[in-house]
Amino acid sequence: MQVAIQVSELRFATEDGVLVLDDISFGVPREGFVLVVGPPSSGKTLLLKLILRELPPSGGQILLIGRNVARLSAKKVSRLRRRVGYVPEDPPIVEDRTVVGNLLFKLRALGLRGEELEEELERALDLTQLAGLADEPAGELPPLEQARLAVALAICPQPVVLLADDPFRPLSAAETERLMDTLLGLQSAGVALLATTRNAELPERFGFPPHPPKGEESWGTVYLRQGVGT
Image (cartoon, rainbow, N blue to C red; front, side, top):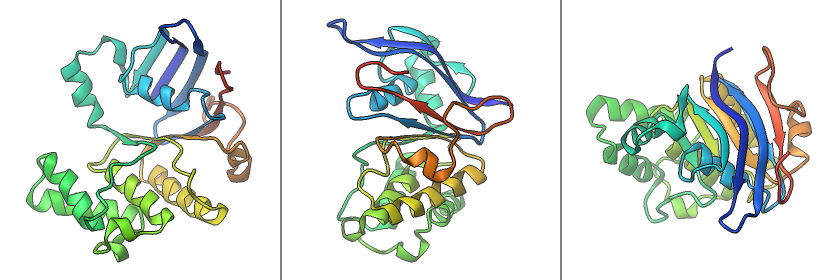
């Protein structure tokens, strides 16, 4: 099975020597889905930043789409990042723009024009169930649709991997289920997903095994605890 993300013996300590992550190893298969579960301050956001090479690890190795991120130049990291979607905890949604306006702004900034732009726009709206809200102001969307818009922005243009930092946090149980359906639709469309959550009940609720994927499995869970990951 091909692997989209491979984290091996990852370790991170602060400049003051505080160990935040220690001996973290897991993989996310191509077209797989892994949840990273942990309380606040357990290193969930830090883990994503390390994968994106926004910070260097203290030890271990990270392979992202087959590339060792620690060995890449800044230019190659930038090029690789175009194949990786990222939903930060505070998504860059422009509230006074419409749903379409937000997506067009990003696609045009990436240099897309004409038919290619229209195809990417339509794809993002369809995959996130936002086509019927295309002309709605982003700031007036309810929490679920705002979360879906954040995902839509992250998948422009077609990533191989999607990283999402606690996208379920502001949602009710019913809204969480609907957002999970959206993410599972992305997985079915061929995107590998790594999402963090502080909700320890989420993996069991949606049938994620309590361990990283092995063999032919495509789902799994990585658990972090406050202070040091496990």
